[in-house]
Amino acid sequence: MGDLTGKTALVTGASRGIGRAIARRLAADGALVAVHYGSNEAAAKETVDGILAAGGRAFALQAELGVEGDVDGLVHALEDGLREHTGQAPRLDILVNNAAINAAGGPIETESPERFERLFAVNVRAPFFLVQRVLPLLRDGGRIINISSAVTRIALPETIAYSMTKGALDVLGHTLAKHLGPRNITVNTVAPATVDTDANAFWLRGNPETQELVAADTALGRVGLPDDIAAPVAFLASDDARWITGQVVHATGGCRL
Image (cartoon, rainbow, N blue to C red):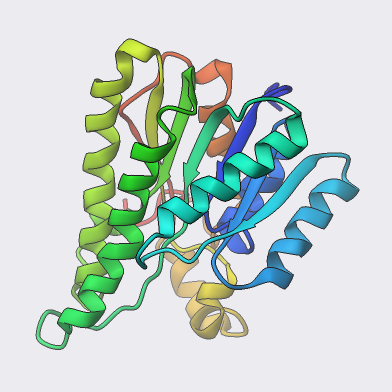
């Protein structure tokens, strides 16, 4: 495990799934983790309680993304939480932009403007302006890690709008890496493929045939787990990754090579 003792981290969408695994891993490595959630307070409390029970440090903060004032509310809650838990002026070391929605509307023929705009509001606008707002809080030498998807290199017509949002996030990552290099802030992207999360439960869990198909399409022969994604995120957040920036790490187990 990397040593993140004394570091502070914000993980968006951390109440469940990949976000929860990332929050737990960063806390296990020593960071004080702000666990952001949109609406599921009980799940966020479960994430925080699990971190505390394991000897880590964490607190929850709520903000619905994709609505007016979303980033302002999130950052105000973050600042208050950091003051309370550190006793100091709020400073941030690690930002993980994980929160996203996949309201897949099918191929271009069936996508609606309303759904399209909602996807971009949550998946692109929110992380863009969150970075903008936290830059004054982010220490020189800090880390920004965006969670993208393998759909940026795999043509899936049924998720075209969602795939476009993740492509935008990839561009945000390498462009910010160039821009923030003078502050020694690294910006990297982790791109999972199929992961066994609650969001995928309706088509993946309890469906051995589907799981076998996914595993057969993956070099390492199984469906991904949230901890498989949390591990490279923790590495990129650590000092061991100090010379890595502007990169996309495909944490897919070799999906569709």
